[in-house]
Amino acid sequence: MTKETHIALAPMEGVVDHLMRDMLTRLGGFDLCVTEFVRVVDQLLPARVFHRLCPELLDGGKTPAGVPVRVQLLGQDPTCLADNAARAVELGSPGIDLNFGCPAKTVNKSKGGAVLLKETQSLYEIVHAVRQAVPSAFPVTAKMRLGFEDKSLAIDNALALEAAGASLITIHARTKVEGYNPPAYWDWIARIKQQVKVPLVANGEIWSAADAALCQAQSDCHAIMLGRGALSLPNLAAVIKQHQAPMSWDEVRKLLTRYSGYEIYGDKGKYYPNRIKQWLGYLKRQYVEADALFARIRAMQSSEQIVEALQQP
Ligand SMILES: Cc1cc2nc3c(=O)[nH]c(=O)nc-3n(C[C@H](O)[C@H](O)[C@H](O)COP(=O)(O)O)c2cc1C
Image 1 (tube, rainbow, N blue to C red):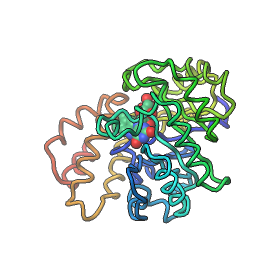
Image 2: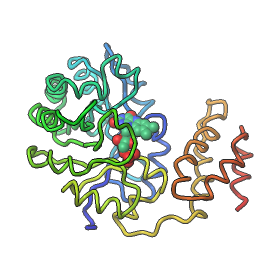
Image 3: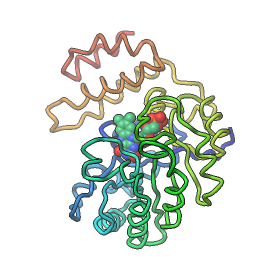
Image 4: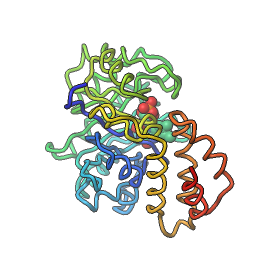
């Protein structure tokens, strides 16, 4: 793996918020983060909505470790998306990412996310409008799946995104129907790459340095995006890029303890207990100890109790 592998941290709604971005980017290896999606329906959103999902906007659009954070928008109305994109950039987002991959039912009913993959022309119109509205120095990028039910439009959709002015396309190498189940069809990214000139980022099912190398080979794509893999092995980006050893369970326990210091005030103290249980769900794929810890803290409601449990090996 060469040094210059570009690694992005995947947007994950309800999971990768600014605190998680801070924790993970401090561990090294990441070049870019993308926010959880900002849902755009029919109005220009107030600044506070952007600041809530991306507090980094108040800090130069970067995590404390200095990794840029790009705001992601999800919606179907080109004009409204364009207006909100311009606002996000004015507020300090170093570019805009557009979500064409979200499988959630409520999202698809209001026609955002993956359902748009059935409408190549809509993809074009959205990206075109957003590109026109955002100053050219700021990248407008898109994140797509290979399709909705099948992959028949994968290449046409990528070509439409490119023609509309997307400067980079991240491809989650599965259809909406394939959900998050393995495998990811990395070879499809290589097929798309034969037709499309803009840089592509390969995403899906990268859990280890070996997976990253295989994905790069099969997708013919150097840049990668890590989602669940980075939650399951927190220093995965540094393992891939800097050949670091995977974190030991002891180091992970320290990380989880440090996370308690990130408690959000005014959340009735539920943030840390809920989020740490959620995180352990991802960690147990890599660490058997995470399962036992989860069982121990499952019923605990307070951060203090959980931190105490974390101290016991
Ligand atoms: C809980 C969860 C939330 C997600 N939220 C978003 C999102 O807000 N925007 C987006 O483009 N993708 C979202 N995704 C998809 C991920 O960014 C990524 O494409 C997917 O998890 C595949 O990568 P992985 O196999 O490395 O996890 C989400 C995935 C999960 C599991």
